Amino acid sequence: MSEQVLYSEKSDQPIILLGYMGCGKSTVGQLLAKQLALPFVDMDDYLSEIHGRSVPNLFLEYGEISFRKLEKRALDDLLISAQASVISLGGGTPCYADNMLSVVQSTPHTFYLSPSLSTLCHRLFSEKDHRPMISHLTSKDKLQEFIAKHIFERKQFYEQANHLLYIQDETPQELVDQIIKKLG
Image (cartoon, rainbow, N blue to C red; front, top):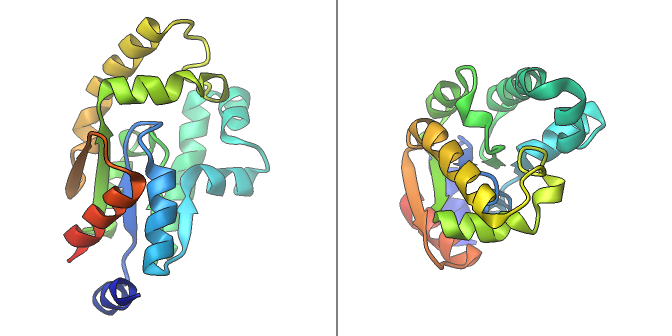
């Protein structure tokens, strides 16, 4: 509990986790929030709650451009009302409109979780049916090619985070420990 007291004494700003889908933002975010006794907000869950539909259904129903507009409004609302909390962004959230600028201006506590390409492929292949952007990919090779291209396009946004965590084989708790250490 001492970490929570130290964090809340020196900051009323959110801790924001970002990175590609499947990188562990939600898992790490929940653990971090619990350990620091802070509220946790998962951007996908927040969008689902506001609009009464899952993110995959919103994405399919509205298309990507309209979905990103909904996401932008939700992010702005979160950042305006944000206090000491842990927020896990959607994988594409930092890459559209001026979202990343808004994020880094709202807090110095932004963390890019960056696992290897092979780790992402392994995690996402079994989940692809629940993720509209990759559900059409039929092989691990096609998935790997898609992810590599996507990360190449998004990396310039992700790397604007204040802290980069290159993930190898760390457990979620080890990542939480690294984040807490960086928070000082």
